Image 1 (tube, one colour):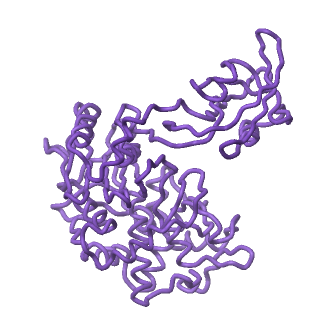
Image 2 (cartoon, helix red, strand yellow):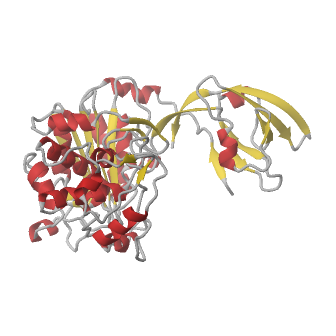
Image 3 (cartoon, rainbow, N blue to C red):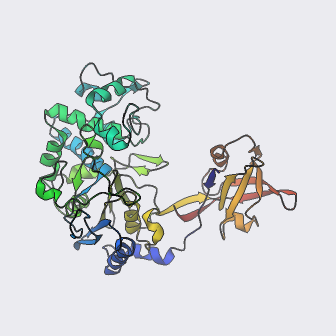
Length: 466
C-alpha cells in the first residue's frame, strides 16, 4: 500500500535542545554516545568509531572489533571505506588546482577531455568544472551504462570508454548550475579530468595536495600491508561479511579509505581549529549555493545540511558516505565550531552523526532518523485501496488536524475544491503543499457515520523525527 506521512509526531525537544547553547561537546554527551555504541554494537561482530572535535581538542569513542580474524577492537586508527565522503576531497582538490592555475573553475569540462567526447549541454549552457564540484551539473545520480550483478561490480568495471560513451549520448534535463543534483558520475568525471590534466592519478593528487599538508597519513585508496591489518572488515545490512570496493575510474566519487583520527584533522581544518593553507578554499566550499533540494536541503560544494532541524546558534554542514560494507560521515557546526566523524563497518549508520551534531538524545531510532523541522497539518495519509480516495492514517496530538476534531480512518474526497479521485498520492500531497499559514480545505467523508463535511486547517511548523 502506498503511504505518505505528511507530518510525523511532534517531538518534545525543548529540554534536549537546550544543550545547543553549549559550544564544545560535554562529558555527558560523550558518555551518552559511548552508552549508545555499547548497547547497539557491544554484542555484535560490527565496529564503529565516533570522533568528536571542538575548541578544547578531540576525543574518540568506539565499540566493537575489526572482525578480521583477531580480537583487536576498533579505535581512532582503524581504517574504513568512507564512500562518498570522498566527494568533499574531490571538490577541494578542484579548488586547489584552480588556485595553482592548473585548471579554471569556469572552464567547460569539455576543454579537459578528448575531442571525441561530446559533453552534454542544455539551452546553450555547458557543464563547467565548478558545476561538477558543486554537484549542479545536471548529470544524473549514476550513469545508465553500468554493467554487473551488483554496484561493486558495476563501479569497479566502469571504464573511461564507458564514461565517454555515456556523456556523448546523454541529454540533460536541467541547465547546469540551476539546481543541486547528487551525482556519482559527475564526481567521478571531475576526478578523472583532474588526473588527465596533471598526467597522474587521482590518489596521487589527493595525497600530495590534501593529505600531506593536513598530515593525514592514513587516508589512501591503496593500502600498505600494515594499513590492511588495521582495516575493519565490512558487513552488509544483515551483518554478513561484505567484500571491499576497489574503485578506479569512479574513485573521485567514493574511493578513499581513512581513519577517524585522520578525518578529525580534516574537520579541524574546515573549522579553523588548526591552521592550514587549505582553509580559504574550505571556506569557499561551505558557501550555500542551493537551498531547495528535497533530499539534501541546503547544499554547498558539495556539503549539505540534509534539511535537519537547527536550533538557534547552530549551523550544520556534513557529508555522508557508504559502500557495500561501510558507512561514514563527516560534519561540523560552523557557529559552535564542533565536528563529528562517524565510521562503521556496516551501511546505514551515518544518520547517527546528524543527531550528535543536533545535540538531541540518542535513541534506538537515531541510527536511521534525525530531527527535521517541517510544515504540515498533522496527518498521515494513504491511498484507500477500495475507494481510491485519501484515507487519514494518523492524527498528531495538538496539531491543526487534532484541533479540528479529525480522526484516523476518515476519507478525503477533495482538497481545496479539487477532487483526489484519479490522482496518485504524490499529486494529492502536492495539493497540500505551502508555507506556514497556508489554508488547506478538506472535504471529509466519515464512512462510519456516512457524513460529509468541510474542514479548513492552517499549516504549522513541527519538529519531527524522520
